[in-house]
Amino acid sequence: MRTARLAVAVAAALAAATAGTLTVGAAPSGAATCNGYVGLTFDDGPSNDHTPAVLDALRQNGLRATMFNEGQYAASYPAQVKAEVDAGMWVGNHSYTHPHLTQLSQAQIDSELSRTQQAVASAGGGTPRLFRPPYGETNATLKSVEAKYGLTEVIWDIDSGDWNGASTDAIVQAASRLGDGQVILMHEWPANTLAAIPRIAQNLASRGMCSGMISPQTGRAVAPDGSGGGGGGGTGGCTATVTAGQVWDDRYNLNVAVSGSGNWTVTANVPAPEKVMATWNVTASYPSAQVLVAKPNGSGDNWGLTVQKNGSTTWPTFSCTSN
Ligand SMILES: [Zn+2]
Image (cartoon, rainbow, N blue to C red; front, side, top):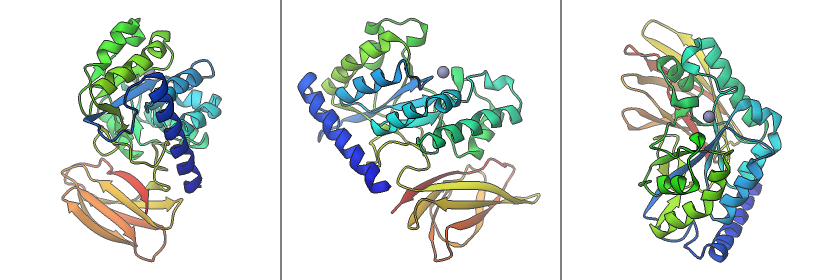
């Protein structure tokens, strides 16, 4: 499975680079020199009406992007989720029905996020690791639910304004202001956004900038990790599923089940002031105070950890890579 996906991604990258050279005449994405990486994002899909054209434009211009899908549309158009992955894009969670989440209860928010995780995964998009709240609206309750599902919240540095009728010129101008690591908000449905894609590619190339992935660790744009699309817990060929364990006044347990690979590395980012007190069934290392790296120790793919609360109960975020 992983090999097949990589082969598709490499073929897509080669095709995109070739097309970019021919049509744009600019340095293709993936050229040796990238002065920096930007995160292009397209919200509110997928759809049969818009997704194919956006994906074609991105590929023809050697760009990769993160597609923040609504769960209801991922469920209705699963083939378009798969097409996003096959085109080398990353798929994030943009809630199920696009409500004002800050006006909902924790249980309602949980439903919005969890159903979207399932819809995207079922469609072949991997388990998302990135979440964009509709309207950029967030609060502590939402953040706690995001943490439960290992989702990193991604707002934006630059709003293209495409949702508000921005012209193609204005969208290109907005993208031209992107600096290294920054993320721009766009949508898959405006015609002006589709028209802007070739010119965004030209502008980025002229500045030596490349389109990158959004890091689940930092929420910033970084070099693609070469694992192809998905953007989910499936990136790198494995998935870590985290469930609640026993809870005490001062600490709590989490159970982690890894699937998709027998030779994996799971990285947990632990929000301060919480601390990992203990682990079981893994070899644990701690590259920094708030980061746990877990590898198999021969006890199988189910393991766990005990987290000291220190006043907080926000779950760590987990990412899995296959070695
Ligand atoms: Zn939206």
